[in-house]
Amino acid sequence: MQINLLMKTFVVAFFLLGLSIKSAASAGGSDEEVFPPKTLEKLKKTYSNEKKAENNKKSNNGKKKDTKAVTENKSSGSSNADNSSSTSSSGGESSKKETGSESPEVLEDEPLIADLTTIIDKDGIGEVNVVWKISSDGNAYRTIPGATNQSFTPRQEHVGKTLKVSLTYLDGQGNLETLISSATTPVVNVNDKPTGVVRLTGESAEDSAFILDVSDIYDEDGMGPFNFTWQRTSPNSGWENYSEDDTEVLNLRQEHVSYTYRVRVEYIDGFNNREVVYSNESEAVRNVDDPVLGDVVILGEEKEGFTLEARTASLSDDDGIASIGVAWERSRDGRNWVSLTGENTKRLSLDQTVVGSQVRVKATLVDKFGIETVLHSQPTRIIENVNNVPVGNVLIRRVSN
Image (cartoon, rainbow, N blue to C red; front, side, top):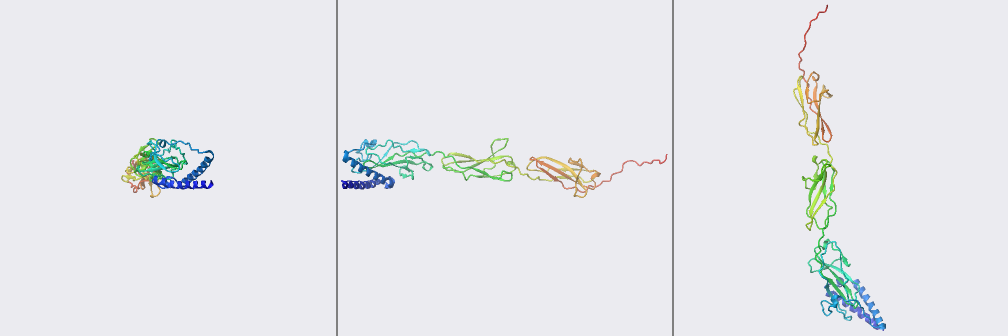
């Protein structure tokens, strides 16, 4: 009895080995593609143990058959070789067929599940092996590495391609069954928002520069050329386009002072979606004091009795001019200067008090940022004296009474 059982076990194992080779050939691939070696070995061992138990039970209680349900395709006609698997327990035949109807729309990043609830096999269903496959042309399908779970989520690399599920198991009679789903429709792209940040770097001060860094931006859907729009705002206004520059560098000049800046970055991705990303906002651009240009000039003849005039029209300041004040100064040695009291207009009448001295103008300019700048004109020549005709009468008076 033991020898007979051992022989039966050997026959079953030999039969299963031949079955796996035949099934692999019918599926158009190797054993590993149809049924991973570890899983196949496990199923063979399970099947062998089940058969031993069944034979022992038959000897005591008679024949007992598994009453598991059959699939719809199998019950509709096991005689059709293309649509059914063999039910002969001694033959060890395998079958391969496509099942299911056309799938609904498949979207990127939306999970899919292989619904196995309608799979029924009268001969019983062993451990199920699920493999997801993908095709770029709808004809040649290849296994997706690692996609061996009942659920699968298509990602960006699967967009535009069709999917199938291959289901493989050993039934209770030792038949290797392979069911293949119908192909999905091509995976539809779902717009992926760009990741990363647009960085605006550089010192926020006049005569410096802002530099735009877009190296951190990434889009799974691909990125076309970037278009840059610099925008600015002030405490008294909202954001507005500043169209002077459309490059990655903004050189800061006087007209940028007191404004806060950012950049609007726009591009078209690989699926024709328009994407917009904004940079961080800068601090308000600080003013840097600009030098006053030009000279204070004195016009007029440097002689007593004449009038000198101070000219400040050539003065300029990029920071703007809020006010200009003038004062006259004199010096007898050209080094030490004293103010002429009360002389703070642009005209100076030369009198005897300045004769023999040099005269100059002290101009005080205040810009629109409150910065004060003091300038001096070139000194005049020494003011010449002009003979003053004596005035009055010579009187003769009697000394005594």
